[in-house]
Length: 625
Image 1 (spheres, rainbow, N blue to C red):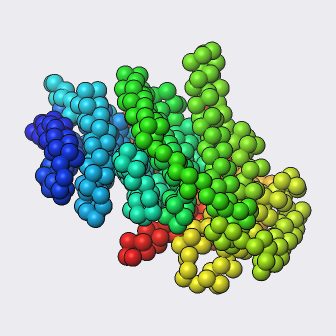
Image 2: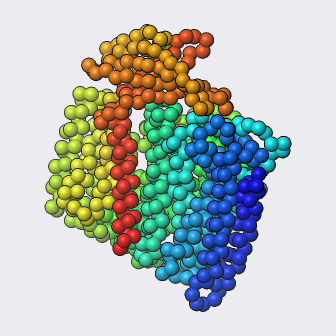
Image 3: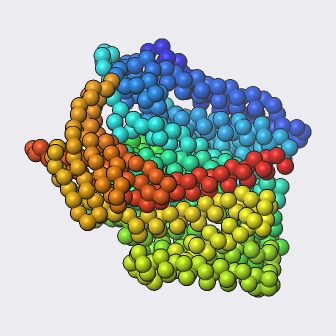
């Protein structure tokens, strides 16, 4: 109980420390001279207090202090130590405390790394960021306190949802929060720079580091969540267009667009309005994601809370932040005449601008698909779900020009390129790409026209980026690697969709299923006792294309909470995954068996890692300059 008390009062004192930060910031802003070091000192004290508070919650989970309501609701004495620690942020209250920790950490790092920049810009960034920090302090202390006490103290906790007890999902939330909270620094920074008319090439070089690091963490966070969903949820897919998946995808789309706009701003001092609007949009979408997940209005395995009061607080706080940001944009941002610069149709700027609009279209589709069912439910009490067909029909046709412009953009020059002069290889690769695509789709796929064009466009980007590796060597290596990774991602997804096969059947021990593609033998079922669950492991022999594989899916019966989960067994190879799950059939001795062959799954994960590696190389390359 002592650790919870320390954690709670650390939160209170952390909120109090915001007062001297505000006082010294405003005082220093009015005065000429150097940046007041007291602002940095108090920011460090605030960070230290939040760290102490977070450590207090972690220790409470480790020692199973069930006098703490958060620990009681989300832990159990038999839970392994790793999941006790990760359970700290595997719930509503703890995840928001982690968010607050990253907020205070990032503003402190910002102050240390921006010493060469304009003093008033640094101060205003601190003030805007402190508004966000204070909002989260109040939210935590008032309606989401992670240190509420229970008396009398229970002897045992309720435990954490078993499907959340997973290594990938333990790392997934911190990664996402690093991306989300990085967008808060971008938000505060762009408001400060707009207020002072400080948006320039120098500012773009500085803020690009924050855009890159936020984008990198968000990309890796989404990847971990997708991998977890693939092997844990049992349906064998990597993206289901679940609403909570979508609310992490939307800020990523905005952040990716922002990254390209910042690159243009750094090189050409244009697209300033794009940079401001996208910076505000990215953070707004991050906060909207928080509202949708925490309010409980989304029905998903990822959601934590079901408390309208909490959702109302976040929504009100979000409206305040949006109002402030729009006020700053319309009052202080002045579109300079030289900003409306001329660049021709055949130029880097044009290709980036076209793909910016396409990214905004993709973002709009995902936003509508996510929030439309919510508004329909509120207005008419009619409940619908928007699934993959909606997104595929609206996104896939526009993905074709997106891929083509993504391939062409790096081949063009800034301001003006001489049409196709010296660029005959572009036409050659285009023809080759569509010929290869036609052959593949004609022999193996369906939807000949759309798949041929789509796969051809992805091959086009693939071949162009491969050529650039050999032509440019180290020049623009990070950009080429990220674009190559993206082309590989699209190709892997398309081939996965075309070549996947699946069989669903009911079997009992000793039975065999056979069709023209597979033979599945259910040989045995054994029971094992683990620390906090009983395991029933099935032993299967799969014959597939003259190869034999032994696969061992299992059912787990957890003791606290009392839940049955299905654990897939996946045989991963270079070209395909063999994926099997089993589930109980109620009041029967049969088991429902789902066996799938998923081509190019490994390359989906590898391609996202390549995209992330491209961003990492760019980050460290710029850092060393």
